[in-house]
Length: 218
Length: 218
DNA sequence: CAATTATTCAATAGATTTATTGAATAATTT
DNA sequence: AAATTATTCAATAAATCTATTGAATAATTG
Image (cartoon, rainbow over all chains, first blue to last red; front, side, top):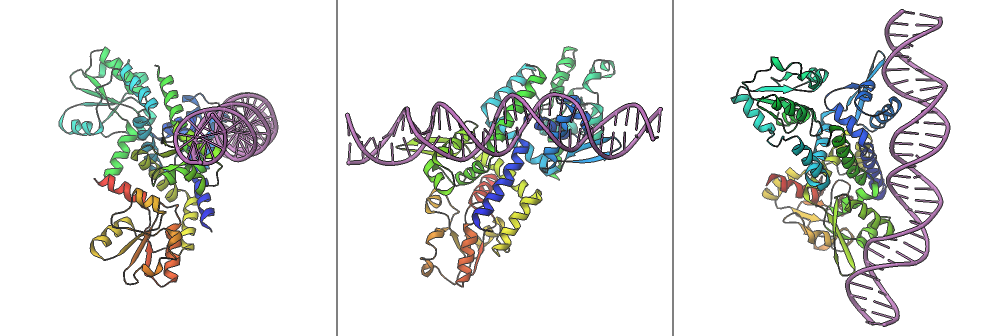
């Protein structure tokens, strides 16, 4: 293989991977799958995609080593191919959010809107878990919680939060979290709970970032 | 801003960035710029692109915060926007080359073709620089060497190597390097020099990786 | 085994990306 | 000021990507 051929083959392959990533709906699907596997139906429910379209996007990602699938009964469950991919994906996001002015602005506006500026970092949270008696609240849908969550967290899905208010102690400081930076469930939880007089803040990042951090420091 | 709007804005922005990356020629340009700034002419010379086309690709990357430009005289010089971007780019490459079977295969075939299997890692090189009296050979074009190189390296551009053979000592062990994994200059140098009886190996990675490593460990 | 369900396939039209062409611009040299 | 040089602009055609539609498939249930 000559030098030129080699380079062309590498750049072609690399750009195929990037093309498979470069679509807003596929990014949203990746974000969803970063909490655990989902059926096509599950993906259709939380996106605006039609069934056939969602299936197509998933196939694009499958043939480009981004997701994998397994069949069980009627259902086909998709998940991210491995944690290495998740790590790369999060590097990209981190770069985009911190270096691209447009995205930084959107991100900051969102955070201000939610008055959640005093969010807790992962490091702070680790500290608080050790030293304080806090209540760590996972507000994602319970399926996601069951699939994996931060040790010690309690599952109260956002849509059940209002009903379960009485069972939550007002004495403890509450930290709410959901998925990565694009997940707004935690913001909603903070808003609702602080309106009700709870002492509550959100985790700056989310479960996937926490998971990655644990993997990296092992 | 509602949750849905926020998500859409983020995913759109992120996918724009990825779209700007997802093209083989633009990847090749990024690779070139990872050694230092280049004029449009410089890029046209080492790619198969026409002038207008190269300019267009550069503009796509400029408007997506991947490269920046400055004008000097007739020339417009482009360079990567910052080291954070370079770091993300290298994460992507590393993932692609190690996790995507197709690319891994191409990469390995290339390495075998060049019989360069006993390449030296960056760690090994650091060790050798300290403890052995090696000759570190930078075979990139001299402009790139001048723009930045590994401390202690000697510049002998690949196209001048044949003529300068006499001035190279046969006593020292030689380590040749060029750019990242896609650069084949070092492979060519190893082939030529070992045919001439020199004791020579190549650096597994290249100058951009070395540079990133230094930055990361500072 | 017929009906149901979740998913995929295949065809198509509209949108976007890309390379090419030739003209336009802006800085420099003559 | 005219000519030259490096780059960009604008228009276009070809290639690729995307969403939609309706039919096909494969596993399960009645």
